[in-house]
Length: 69
Length: 136
Image (cartoon, rainbow over the protein chains, first blue to last red):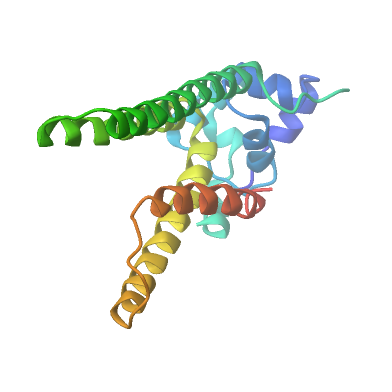
């Protein structure tokens, strides 16, 4: 699933490890999310949304769902 | 910027799991030697002999509990990776078990079931990096 996590992370000048620490997940999970290899669960998507203070639909592109399904 | 390989939470979970496994496997070896020694040197009733004989299996239930706790402590993707690897391990072990059962039917010696535990652990560990690669 395509998303803007990498861009948002860069805007905040956070490393993958920093974002992983803030979300309580593994760095590899952030990497998998950024590369679109993994679509997060709804609770994790909302945690990411809260971290970047943006609505979920402004971070994740629902039109790219079929690519990872 | 330096990227830590593991977050502090991952390190804490890993440390706890390693510590639990070390204690449980040490306990297993200790109980195994003690029970073998007891059975060789003592004269017990059949019931007590069975109880002493089964005691080395007790730490294995602790291993199962430690694995469950580990699975519940990691994040959703890492859990998915581990569960996929564990499913492969269960499938391979089941396939090997049924294959050897047929071979026993044509004369190969009867095998003891403990190898299934070792097989699941080994295939789980071997398949983990291959499963992980799918998400990199």
